[in-house]
Amino acid sequence: MTTTAQTKTTAPKGRPRHAVGTRRTLDAGELAAFGLRDRWYPILPSHMLQVGSMQKVTRLGVDWLLFRDATGRVRMLEDRCPHRSAPLSAGQHLGDRVACRYHGVQVDGEGTVVSVPGMPGCALEGRRATVSLEVAEAAGAIFAFVPLTEDSEPTPFVLPDRLDSEEHSHFLNYVEWAGPWRFYMDNVLDPMHGAFLHRDSHSMNAGGTSARFRIRETERGFFFEKTDQRGKNFDWVEFVRGSMDHVDLEIPYGDEAGPGGPFGIVGMSVPIDDQNVAVFHWRTRKVQGWEREVWRFLYRTALEEKHFNVLEQDRSVLEILAGDADTHEHLYQHDLGVSRIRRLYKSDAKAQAKVLAGEA
Image 1 (cartoon, rainbow, N blue to C red):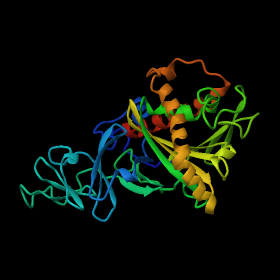
Image 2 (image 1 turned 90 degrees about the vertical axis):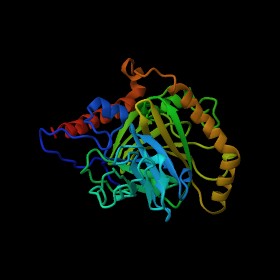
Image 3 (image 1 turned 60 degrees about the vertical axis):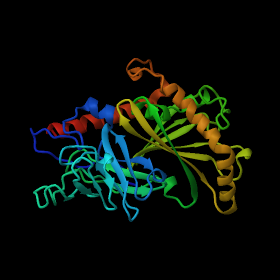
Image 4 (image 1 turned 180 degrees about the vertical axis):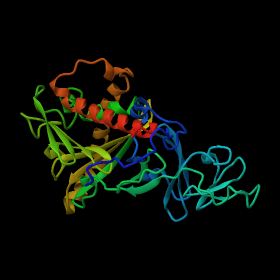
């Protein structure tokens, strides 16, 4: 798996540049608030975009239009007509293109203007004038590479191990929460909260309420794990910096959950804006044959609701945190993972801000 999600975007020194889709130069604080770029992000569950349909979404503080063309291929454009910036999402789906409602200008999936009905043959026709993102569809979700600048080159699209494995069966859960996206990453890099916030859950009601932790480096990221307990609760999490940043973890399952090994989770988040986040969790299990069928049946009939209740416990706390909750704290040893991810993302934000400022 790719060990970095950073691209080698270069800019002439001294010439500030706009971040794609923003029409302005973002500083490090804004990048940290609205989301780092030059990464693949999950955008929307696939089932929410049918053939011939369009869907407006906001991601990283930018309005985008998703549409699935007549062949089933997903396209993602900035939600602005290149003529007068009217939202393309208010227009008409024409199979392989979208027509703006305001003046009928037609834009295809690559962002190229293919027709200006009001003035055929004008210079706008044939021009790639609307931002179009690289899109991939896998594991029940639509992903997009969100570039920092116009010349950012997408990194190879590589799914997390559990989602790319034929040995694993998975279900996707999608939710949108109020609150800064960084709070989600802090939460999943904090295994100790499982012993308290989720103490009455079906899967995290065992193990101790005190522990010691360590960070263990890997070639693709790091583990944050308990040193004195394993297989009892939310005892470890791995942060993976791959094609897309994600976390990987396991929760032990009892016999009542049916055949198979531990319950695995692949977690990702994408900022909607600086005050809202879209959260994607793939619930996985390594099962084959008849065990897979039993697991999938049990999940749909009994376990899915229980897992959603656990997620709601997270939401109930994260949504009531003060917007500056992560600036007035007294951290201790259990927060090594939180401190590590914050330093990593702060460093990334500063590096990307330098590129935009023309200093890189």
